[in-house]
Length: 89
Image (tube, rainbow, N blue to C red; front, side, top):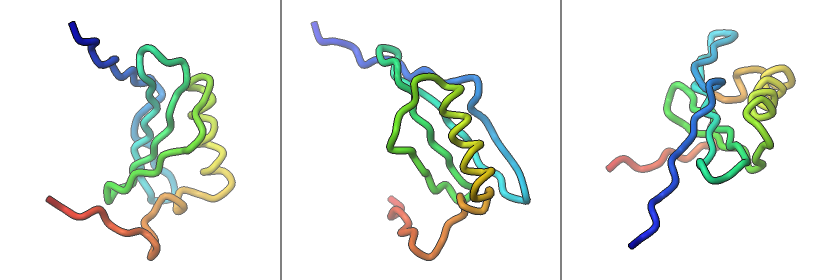
């Protein structure tokens, strides 16, 4: 019998965030059998920014998002000239 893939657990802190005319989707998740949380921010054009570091809890992940917004502003999540779009299928 093969082992099943673990379920994805999504934090209640995940959701849409808007500020300064910029809206993003904040996704905080982990695998059900792992304790570390992953932080992803997806902008309006669908560009995904995933933190390399993982977080001990979902609160820490959300605080990391808030810190980036405080330090750099929401515009940091906008596409820039150095973003290479993923080819469509």
